[in-house]
Length: 298
Image (cartoon, rainbow, N blue to C red):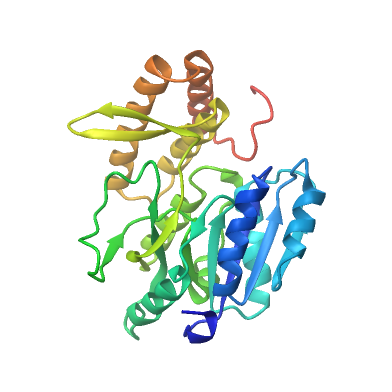
């Protein structure tokens, strides 16, 4: 189903940082036909000119360069702001390596509209991702239209209601990278908005550079990141623990996740010494209340 068949005006926002150009080209070729506009915000890539040439080769696609890495939240907010200025009724966020299926946007848009009854407030609906980490799935068998309530969604593949963005506000730029989406959905939930995962809306997406398989009651697949990412994961979790709106259930679940990651990546997998250093520094800075980019060990 093309954009003309959708019941919402949708603008897609893509943030790039040193992307694989072949993957980005494939993404834009899949996304542009499904939306009214694509806004690409580059976060200081070394090959920014090549990205610009690629992006400007697609119709309905606009490129903005930040010149430096201002963080995911800042880039998202710039794109969201441009989309709302253009009158978008919904905003689709995509990571640079997310590949939507041909009907993903139309399925999300239909669900967002059908779920938004006059007495309900739906902040966003998110696509189901297929990739190396998608071994666990709450969806039923294929052919069954299923919408699942979600406390949080990953930002990539999420279709945000414009009215929700205006009321709830945009992303917390101080978190810089990790938990930017988590924080927004926790804030939305606290203010009475709901979100859903949509099983029939499908995208190809990966979390992390690769995965680590571990048995913890069942086989689990943990995404492995570069060490600096663990700084932001741990720091931003601690920052969120200090806020009033995250639920006790979310905090308990997240603490267990961080403990599991600490054991896996500080003891068994990856660059263990550097991982441990970044995790501990993240906790330290989270307790201090530091946000923004990691500048120095202060």
